[in-house]
Length: 112
Length: 113
Image (cartoon, rainbow over all chains, first blue to last red; front, side, top):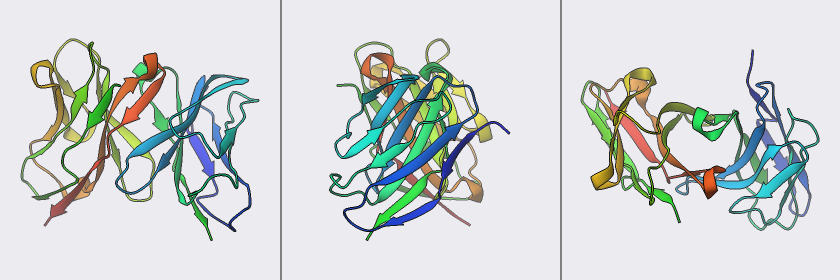
C-alpha cells in the first residue's frame, strides 16, 4: 500500500533530551513537510523539503532540525532547545501543492 | 500575509441536519483553497480543493464547498450530516510563493444523535 508512515505513534522523552521522529513515504513525492499541531492553534509548519538534500525553515523552525538524504525519508529531530516540545507532529508529502498534501498518522510526543 | 480564518471553534448539529463550516481567506490573487478533515488522534484527509473554474466544488463523503470571491469565503457544506462526520475540519490555502500550505485553526464538529 502506498502511503506515509510515522513511527512511533507515541513517544515519551525526558526534558533536555533530543528525539528524532521518523517519516517515510512510498508515494514517490518530491516534497515533504513537518507540521506541529497544538489544541486551538491548527497546524503550524516546522520545515519543508522540495527535493532531496534541500530543505527550508517553516514558520516555527526554532529548536528543530531535519535532513533529507533520501527521497522517501524526512526525519525530524526535536532538540533540547525547543521550549515546549510536547505536541502532535504530522508529516506530509506532496507531488505538488495543487495536487494536495497527504498526511501521515502522526506522532504524539510527550516530554516529561 | 496570506491566511485563512475559521471563525467557529466548535459547532454542534443534529444528525440529518445540514452543515456549513465557515472559512475566510486573505489573499490578493485567486487563492488555492482546501478543506481537510481530521478524526481524533489521526492524520488529515483531503476533502476537496479549489483552484479555478466552477466555484462550487464537490468533494468526498458528500461534502461540497463554494468559493465566493466577493466575500473572500470558501465555506464547506453538507446537506445531511451523519454521526461519523464528527471530527475536526481545517481550511487551508497555498502561501509562501506557492511552496507552503497554511492552515486555519480548525472547527470541531459534534454531531448529536
